[in-house]
Image 1 (spheres, rainbow, N blue to C red):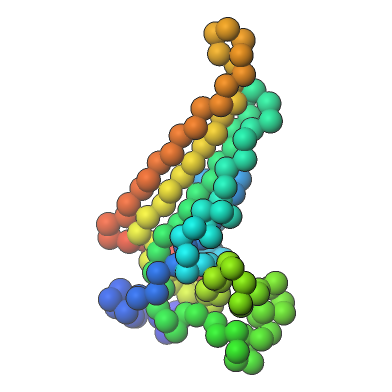
Image 2 (tube, one colour):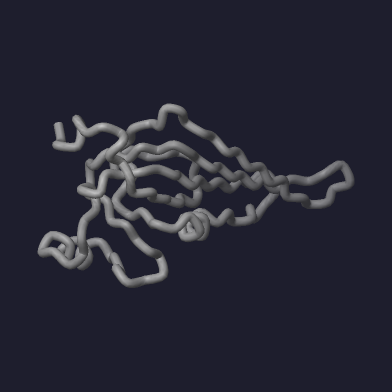
Length: 144
């Protein structure tokens, strides 16, 4: 049990976003690479157009909050080690918020996108796009 397991959800004040391409499966743990900007997560989850009829591509963006203590500061000894080991660029446009592995993330929204290539009645190749916005109330507690 981590120290954060007993924390009130009111203390989860840092908004974070994570984009995943090629899946709707939200793997657990969620991983340490999050962003403070929703647009960055959207870029990471950008949907690829399927190549062949019958092919489907998927992506998901997670929206949540973390406790400030869950953030790894890149200027500390721990943070410098993590930056080197996990290809993190603290001053990049990605606005990365590196979340301590195993830390609680309160996920309150999920945006899913799907693209499917198919042939219509005339034999023409088409792409069908679908999007789903899901809100969790109360937020789902997941692990980074």
